[in-house]
Amino acid sequence: MKTLLTAVVAVVLAGCATTASQAATAATQTAATGSAVGATRIAVWSVNSDGPDFRAILTGGVGDYGPAVTVLPNGAVDPEHTSEMELNLSRGSFRLSIAKFHSELAEALAHWPYDPATCSVDVTVTSTVPIVAGSGTGAYRGIAGAFTLTTTIDEVDVRQRGCNGNGASGLSPFLAQLIAMEGTGDLS
Image 1: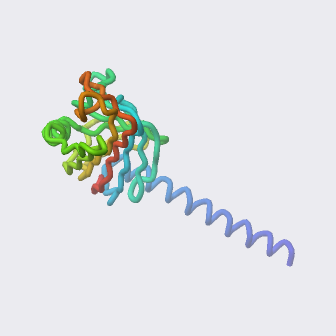
Image 2 (image 1 turned 180 degrees about the horizontal axis):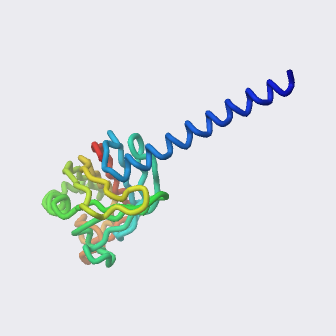
């Protein structure tokens, strides 16, 4: 009886291992062939920095996290946030094209409605941000799609010659700032 039970357990374990191996192979093939990954939610944020560095988390069709940085097409860091954002996630990387988004945000920032009593401001912009074709590495090789991102910037500035913006342009520096981007996309 003990030998029969041992044999049954071995067969069940072998079946589970085969099923797990087949699932892993299917997942790898899906990523490699560009099959649908599905709805993915993205959140990217920066706290108290006008610099190029951000943090990112993706959930749903892609579950991953890691640092992000704004870059130029040649990979050089882009402190002005004008071209691409590279997501360096735990299982690979890919880039988002943020050029159109940047111009829409610049237009909104030109009309920031400062609260003169508190020297604070907020602005919100929604834009489509596509994945840069061919930019995927690791688990994201061949990734395609776009996110619809809503970006909100909240800021409290130093009262210096009035309330006139952050220190990036030689104007009043901020005391606190949050840049938050959230959205969804169907990826393949």
